[in-house]
Image: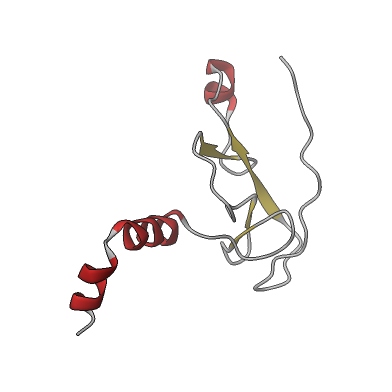
Length: 96
């Protein structure tokens, strides 16, 4: 099995915590699914988006990037995508 090491997490941007759980992205092999321990790694799935989390703080559950910024949640990303796909005239009408 190929193993890669996760670089140390930056401090949590919300609570300055130093203990974080890393995310692993990509299609997991069967042995990873069997061996995964949610206290040690979070399976992030196959979809990659800008600002996605790389770590989750154990102290406050804030998700943050490798650069130490709060991550964009999947729900925020979905809402932004839906907003961008609505024609401008419909958005203006809804805002009146």
